[in-house]
Length: 428
Image (cartoon, rainbow, N blue to C red):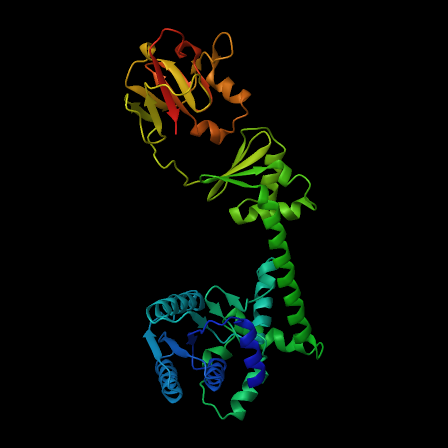
C-alpha cells in the first residue's frame, strides 16, 4: 500500500513546489493510517484535531490519542475544543462546518498550504448512495473530488479493507467512534444496511461502481468545458451579463443546455424557455438574479446590483465634471464639428450650470439630422438600446431642454453655427 500511496500522491502534486500539509486526524483508523503513510515518506505535515465533546470521556480519549500520535511522529499538533449540543439537529453538518472553518484558520496562521483528509473509496460509495436519495445531478453523483481548492483527499483510491489491513500489519493504534455503529445518521445507515447487500450482488460491484463514478466526473468536466465555449459570446457589461440569442438558439438538446447554463443563477429551464418565447421587456426574477428579455439577447443582472453612484442628477459647471462620467468643457475648439463623443455647441444658448441626468418619460428633443422633435424613448427604440442601456444613458441639459443625449445625438437647437461663441464638450 505504501508504494501505491507514494505513486498516487506524486500524481496529485505534479509540481516541484514543496508542500506543507495540514492533516485532519479524528483518531480513527483512516486518518491514523494516512498520518503514518505521510511520515514514512518523510512528507512535511502537521496534525489538526477537533474535540466536539459529544461523547464525553471518549471524545477526550480521542484527543489524547491524537496528541500522542503527533508526539510519536514528531510533528506539530493543533487541537481545539468546539462543544456541540448532542441534542441539536444536523450535528454532522455542524461538526463538518466547524472542522473545516477551523482547519482553514490553522492553515493560514501556520504557513500550511494544503489540507489533507482521509476520505477513502468506501466513503465514495456511501456518498453516491446518499446523493441518489437526494436526487443529485451529474456533479453530485460523481462523488467526492480528490482535489478541491486547498483541500486534498489522497486515500480516495483505497478501499477500507486495505486501510484496515495496513493498520493491523503495522500494529497501529486507533480508536473506534461508537457513533459509527449507529444507523441514526443516513451515511451510517447506508454503510451498515445498503452497501453490504450491494456488494453481494457481484465481486466487482464496488470497483465497477467507482469506475462509473469516474465516468460521471469526466462527463461533468466535459459539459463544463462546453459551457465555457457557449459562454464565449456572453459579454460582461458592468454588473450585467449580455447573452445573445445566437449563443443558445442552436443548442441541442435545448432543455439540457438551458438547465446547465441558467440553473447556477437560480432559474428553472421552463422559466427561461417562456422568457425566450415572449416579447422584449419581459423579465424573470429569481432569488439573486433578474433575467430580462431584449430584442436579440437576454440581460442577466444581480438583484443587488446598483449603480456605483446612485444619484441620477448632477450639476455641470463650466469647468466640466469628473463623475459619474467625465465631461471636459473647453472654449478652445479642436474639432471642427460634432461627433458621438464631442459636442460643439453655441455657448450663448447654454445656461450654466448644465444638468446631467437620467432620462424620464415624456422627454423630447430635436435630434440633428432630422426635422421636428422626437421622444427620447422613441430615439432609444430606434437605436435598439436594451433596458439596461436606457437605464445607464445620461442626458446633458440646459434648464429643461435636452442639449445632448451623451455619446449619441445632439439637440440641433444648440449646435454651433457661424459667428457664434463656440463651446466644445468632450466625453472623455
